[in-house]
Image 1 (tube, one colour):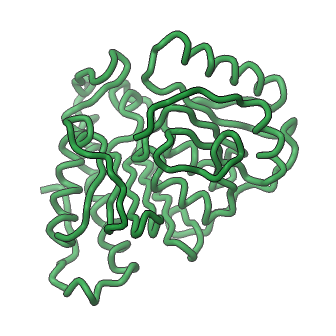
Image 2 (cartoon, helix red, strand yellow; image 1 turned 180 degrees about the vertical axis):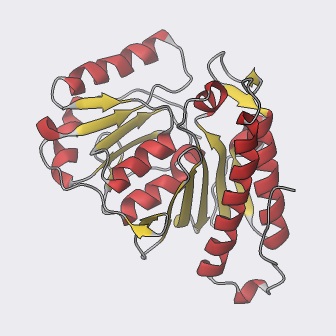
Length: 287
């Protein structure tokens, strides 16, 4: 197989957060080898459509998710799971107080299918609805963004911090379109883009919410606004951003609701205060 995983015979009441983090990191990196194998051949990975022609899924999404859930279940049989393909196949998206893994096996599947080097594995772990750890593996660039609550944010073991940018006119932003192709939603998003691009250095759209947020954490991007992603797209990355010093909120500036499918991640309070009045709102069904 493509993975090596630490033995998980430790009694559950003796398992520490750091042990869980180590095990999860090993599994995520090993799963990344499986994803990388898709591009050894010269042809694109085949894909199917989910909710729209732009909402893609591949055998590697399903295979990676099966691998992650299977191994984590073996180690932690009492833990719950929220995962993208599981929910797409009719599973529940129900975040409770129970220890819960929130998984996106490949965030940026469209990029993955086309060979565009911006896709990742995202794994977050929550207890009592609060994030405990987050791991985002940028597979093409071999970068592991990670955080344990209260211990800072890291990329490949090195401390990362978000930027100190306070002026929107001096900022570089990121945004995403997602797979939805409804006209009113696209017009709303384009309206936001038009408004923001007039006031900042530029807007980058790389097609992965998890990587966008990690890029804020690393200081590459000053703010990221998202309308429409799901909890598995940002569960891990938003903890990494928080631990890097970022400000995470709803786009209207109110506290973030993880199930709302809307978020704003900024490097500073000052930047958030300048962006919020420009965003407006769009009704979206919660996860």
